[in-house]
Length: 246
Image 1 (cartoon, rainbow, N blue to C red):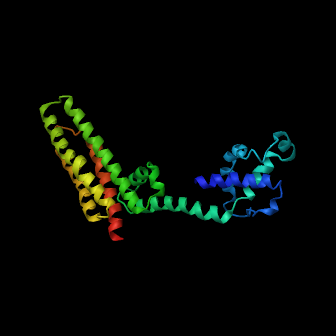
Image 2 (cartoon, one colour):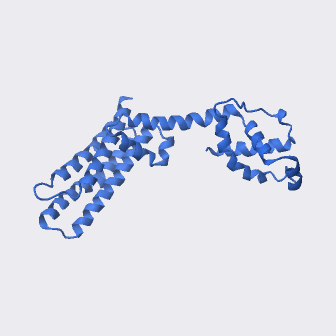
Image 3 (tube, rainbow, N blue to C red):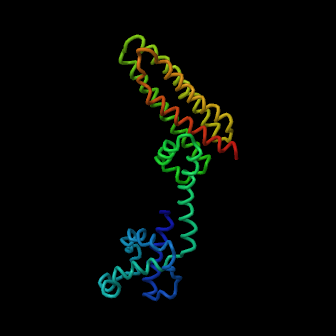
C-alpha cells in the first residue's frame, strides 16, 4: 500500500472525529464502487493508529460511550476520496503485474522469467527497460555463483580429467562475470541495447561450451548451473529484444 494512503486513512478518521460525526460535511465513498471491498481489508490495520489525533480524542471514556469502533471503521471507509485513491493505486499495481506477465510471455522461458522477476521487489515498479536490467543483474548473480561452485570443485582435487574440464569452465566463466556482463549491464543502463544484447547472448554460448566439455565417461557436475545460466541469458536477451523493437 502506498504511504499516502496511510495518511488518507488517518486523515479521514481525524476529519470524522473532528466533525463529531457530521459526516455530511465531507465527501462520501460510493459503496457500490467495485473497489469498496478493498478498503474493508486494507483500512483495518490503520484503526490502531487513531491515537495519532490525541487532541481530537481528549477523553477515551467519552469516545467509547458515544462512538463504537465498528461505526468509526465504517465512517473511515466512507470518508476516503475515491478518485485519487482509485487512480493512483490500482492502475499502477495492476499494470506492473500485467507488464511482467506480458513481457515474460514474449520470452523463450516464461516460467523462469516470471519467477525470477517476481522474486525481485523492484520489478513491481519497473518498466520494460527496468525489467531487462533486473534480469541482467539476476543473470550476473547466478553466473557468479556458478563460478564459485566450479572453483569449489577444483579445490577438492578431483581426478585429473575432471579437473581439466572444470578449469576450462572456470576460464570461460571468469571473463563473463568480471567483464562481459558488467559491461553489458552498463550499456543497457545507457540505452545501448545492441551492445548489451551481444554481451548477454554471449553468456549462454559460454555456458553451453562449458557443458560440452564434459564427454565420454565424465559426467558434468555443472549441468544444472549451465542450464540455469543459459535460460536466464535467453530471457534477458528476449527482453532486450523487446526494447530494440521499440
